Image (cartoon, rainbow, N blue to C red; front, side, top):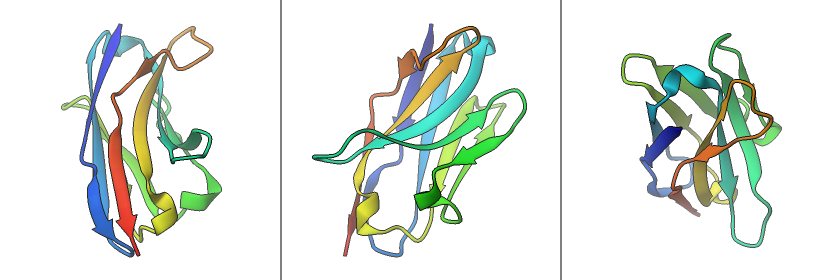
Length: 119
């Protein structure tokens, strides 16, 4: 089991920045991929970006490339999502998710944190 605890959401004006955190605990040695997703009202859940935990490779959906950056602090067992140049369409509940070695899906999810971007 891996537990994920998110924080950092809030209300920001368009063009502003926020940083989300996702702190891991439990069997963190089994983590294979950590990702961010978001869910806006009336829309399907959307992949935002991923961090391949062992290789360090990063992946982003096109709509956030150049604006969002995923990073991690190994000592703190925390992944971050730095969001710059925020747009109203970035408004959503953001979730971090974990895929462990051998799994074919994301089995562990954070509780979600609301990000609201005002125009």
